[in-house]
Image (cartoon, rainbow, N blue to C red; front, top):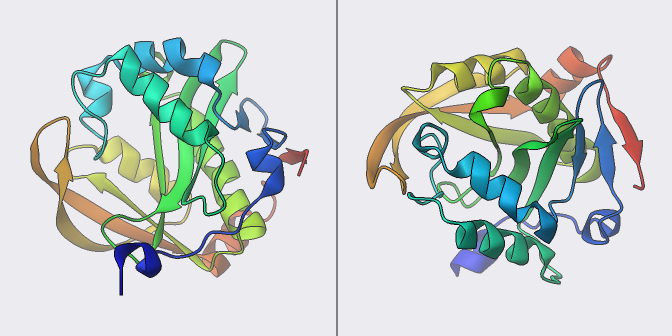
Length: 208
């Protein structure tokens, strides 16, 4: 079986592809990232303490890296393998959260996110991730979501635990920014556990 054939098929969401889907919480709004976000993405990602916690982000992170990533999202597709969302507050884009096929597990789909350093520790990650998980379970009809965090990034683990994720195993994962394998703590969230813990905390949906 080819790698492409092994990946799970994510449902095509027309409103997302059209840029018309937004998910609104009390303090953040999620929308499809746009080419005009490139300067903001580049500025926030130009921080090793941000990109070292990601597996696929390069270092140094150049403006062209942001432009290329946003161009990939904007490209027409009939088989989107990921659904990234810009996390927006009154200050503009503060980070990104998304649902994507899992490069470490061809049968899995995972939650990922990053936030600029000025926005750490303010609860934005938990709120934005909860909205993304609602999208994954409701719109994409997924039954479980994987996630993971590098062992030296305990703050991310606390966010995932708040959302109901439970640890499954420790496994090495390559960090492009660090250019080495890093110990990674893997987690899982079944649909039922999220529904039990988040039924009263759903966000507002627009355009979908």
